[in-house]
Length: 592
Image (cartoon, rainbow, N blue to C red):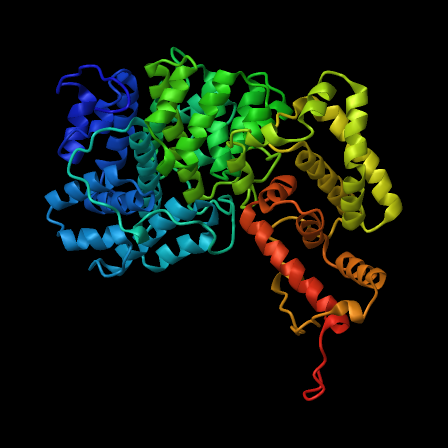
């Protein structure tokens, strides 16, 4: 049994026959989709194209890659399935254990070990993949067709793992826990590339007149996506993908095309896939949404004016994509409660899985966007995108909630009261950011004007004060960008301050009041703060001066918590070093 009811399809159903050939059994995850047999047909078409043909890689190599990728995704269902498949062709349990645990003592060739390392990076840290990873495979004499197949197999594994998480099928065999070292780890090692540093592989020239898949994309999408071009070494796989696009994405008998595109969009955003976000935003604009509406759905669909049911549907897709370990039957029931039938839910799971397939493909191939992205997604978006899913608990304790509600209804007096309450705080932040009193006053007027213009879109996802400080911070930082366009204020800079190491770590006097008056201390601290780079200064102001929590600071600046902690640590060290000559105890014995 799975989360959804099943219909009866006998063993002569063609996709079941195909899966029996591929795996030696029909996995329950496909039986769990019998309410919509066409979906199973689409999945079987891609699986047969990927696994049956032995060109660059053997079927055993592909199954081994799938086992390693399933372990990387932390998916016990498919780890068990691929273990069984490989055991049936004579691979010993000890070797399988080593592959699952990501150790390098599995007795594999150097080339196969390199492929598994590559697979794990595609699965775990796709946005961090670069041309150097592909170059390493070539140094192991792995040809381009084999590399392409490794990427496609990993993408198909992402597809199938998402299906099993979303459908909850009963295990086909007795499952075995995945060692901690074999499950998904936090991506943060290596240089962030964003999955668009390629393309990494050569392509084969094909004409839409002679290759029907190209004609299909030209007619339906207005262009041949670079992601499709990048797979022309395997035209049969492209044909299977086109068939799946027709069946899964373009059919509108259950979910609408608009709902499906929105699922693709929010899933691509949480996967930090700039290529796919740009593509689906462009598709939504072609369907009649404005650029601002599609951008808002990508950045925070909860503030995009969607219906409660569609908001819940996108919550469902995001959780299935970004937090599979937390996914449960309760998530199915939550969507069902908003009026979605079992067929709706089944199709939502498959669409989410299909999006993960394409996201993984794109990251592994490094294709550049077909349209100019309006926003580039990076590590700083991870936390911001995750917090949009929090229930609005803060609204219940927000002291400004009543005034905000009145202001949203057009009460100007209520908005003026909000200005009075927060003007001092906003001004302090802006003075700290821009470092100029007159400019801070101008920026404060801009801040409150923007808040007034957009207050109706405030949906209590944070405290009003946090939202207001987010506007203030962005306003101040934008003024700095306009003033000094060459200075990077964003995450991931590589200026000299990134390698900052304190040179004067001294013990501060126990009672600095004896050395300086309060006014003098304040002047020294303010001057020290103003000398900090802006991106560190603003974090220090929000956390240490305005006493925002780390989480609220992350929301206000649109950064992840790790980035906030890193910047705050650097800011404190920089400020401490600047103030050390004034507050440190001199040790005359060593001349310090």
